[in-house]
Every structure is written in structure tokens, then in C-alpha cells.
Image (tube, rainbow, N blue to C red):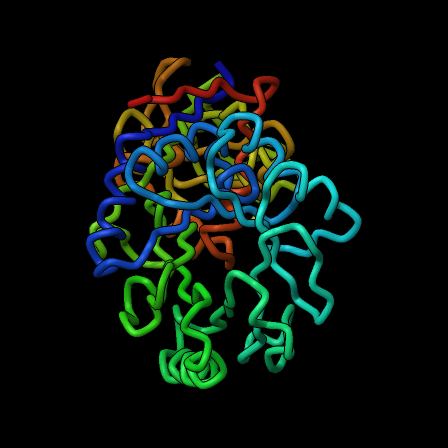
Length: 337
């Protein structure tokens, strides 16, 4: 076994229910773009719909078409520009987000307002806005600067209060958890559904359970004599006789080079990753000889993506999306289906 990715759909359902309890009647729209942040779009979509989510959200029309094949009756919103795929979206009964003034006919449209993100969207609603189904915005700092997020919400409310017939949605995961005034008619939650904190801390603080776990094993254990090294560039040189374990995973599997120094569990004990992580292998520092085949937990049992992200200088979202769950690299196991 090179590695195993386990997806706990029971935890996903419980996270959805935790978010629903915070909404006071607003709808939960589940963001399953980027293969559900690396967790598996079809499996996760089914679980969140069963848990009470009322719509699925993706980034592209091809992502939506994959889900339409699996869920003929689901409401699906494409959050990114449709470009030349409007016809496909119309045929598949998808809803589209429109970031500009041109509104396609024959398809459910949600107009996007730019209230401070500085990306997609109009600065104000066009005159034809009454012909669309919904209006939305995206918050830039709900995870870090609530004052600016509230300013965005004030702008959004001022632009849309006169349009009660439209479905209004603004909240991402962070706003759903911290800004009740952002809930409007629906919220669009992604990262929190998967039990990953949008604030970079412990997800348990918001009642969330990690959905993904990732394990591998010691493929080889060897004793480095003083002065010997492991990995490219000799970034780790043993100062005394030192046991090291070689893992059969590397940056092609999602264990990024910048994760040198992070902690994994070897036989249940935290051990540091040392040396340069290569494409297909990494090394961990051991305190004793262990047998090849010993289980190594990269994510799970207290080893969080948030902690790895802090070491790598990035966010847990990026690490989750980068874990290679292809059957050519890892075995994928779905639990609680």
C-alpha cells in the first residue's frame, strides 16, 4: 500500500447538520467544487443532500455536468463564468452566476455583486435585475477582518433590500459561523462541511469533524551512521547514529516539499518529517528501529490539515485539494455511505 485516503461521510453529514443548526431557517448550499475540495464530489454531494443541503455549488459547467449525471433532480449553481457553455448549462437545467451585465436567456441566473472582493461581479445591479432569480456577493475577510466583512454586507443589503423577490446569498463558511447577519436566504458552505476550519485553527472549536484521513506506512527503516544523510541536497545529516523511516509518498501525492518539519504519527507517536520531500518518497525521524509496514498517519487522529498548513505557510484548503486520491497513487475508502 502506498497510501490510503479515507472519507468519513458520517462526519460530513454531521458537519452539515451543525451548520444547518446555525442558520435559523436559511438554506444550506453545499460547495463541492474542485472534487469537493479533494474529498470526492459525487460521494460528498450525495451525503450533504441527504443531510439537508438544498443546493450544490461548483466552479465550472463541466463540474456541474458530472453532478447532473449523478443527481438528475438536484439544484446546481455554477459559481464561475460559464463562457461558451451556456447552452450546455441550459440543457442540463443548471443555474448560472453572471458576473457582468449580459444575462443569458432560458437559464436560472444569479447576479454577482462585487462589494469588496475585487474579483468577479458588478458594482451595482443592472436595470434588468428583476428578471433574475438571485443576487449574491462574496466576502473577502470573514475569516480575518469582521469589520470589513460587515461593510460588505451593508453594501450588499443597501443594493438588494428593494428586491425582496430575489434569493440573496452572501455567506461562506467563515461568515456562516461568525456573522449571523450574513445568512440572508441561503449560505454557501464549502470548507467547513469537510471539517476543516476556515480560521486555520482547531475545527472542533466550531463543532466540526474532519472528514478526510490519510495514512501510509514505513516502506523501509534504516540506520544512518553519523555523517550520513537522507534525501536530495543532504538537507538532513545525522550527527549521531539515527534511525529513519522512508515513506512511499511525496509531493506527487500531496505531501508538499514545504511540509518538511511537520509532524506525522508513526505507530501512534508524533515524529517529524526530515530532509527534502521528493516526488514519491519522504523520510521521518525515528527514535528506535520499527518494522517495515508500521502505520503512519499523515492526516487523522489529531494530525490536522490546519497544523500541516501552518508548517507549509499555506491554508488547509490548498493541502486538501492537492492530496492525490487517484487509484494510481492511493487507495480510496469511503466510510458511512
